[in-house]
Length: 323
Image (cartoon, rainbow, N blue to C red; front, side):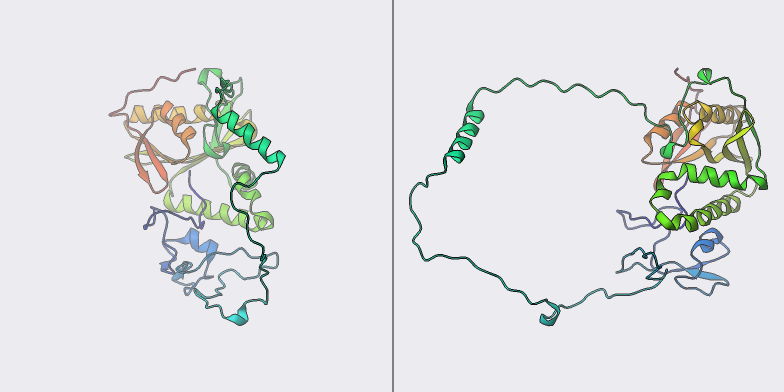
């Protein structure tokens, strides 16, 4: 439902999307940005008591440290411009090939092989065109319903005979939540290499801290299938809305209609109470957006790089799920 906290994203416009800040070295208050401060600390400046600084990428670029952590995080080096002088250039020579013979005039005879090649091309160009055979269409592939393989859609009546329940999250669920986080983000984490052991717990703590700071009264639920934890769902309810903060399933339990089974009662609750159901989805994730639309949600606006979606029971009719 959200991108990585502390990630630097290149954008093709001159403003920071909602939830982002421009990397120009500005000072931020710790009290209002606790999750981000827990990740980057004072690597880039600040007193560490009341404030901290963001990296300043004006005229600079980001480089990855090697296995020995060189350069260090936050270290600044290099110059924006450098004038090259002759001593900076390695000694080298250029060899020029020339001949004093007079060049031939008129048509130049080509070797036999090249004459045949050209003749063949000419005959192909001016001859009768060959009928084209249409390439067979590739078989249809069902797209995943949520980016990063989080959920897939299946009609509710096709659910397997499994007992799906939800219970409140407990402190003892820490190991499972890490397993779920690594499972959902597996492709991204694989690209981190050796730094994954350090970054995974940092990102997980920052994510949990951000959820609890923004939605302190949210209902954190563990999704169980036949008594075994398979996912989680975080829902925040207020007098004016029902918001899905996060929902995720383990890979082994996706594609079974569990996602639809989890979200359908929330859609029903929204219609019964008259409160809109809201969530955000990556703007590039067309498959997830289609799933939410099948459940009755509609796109309301583009917020940064995410679509804001809502099911408003006052203005929207109940959808009909196709098998």
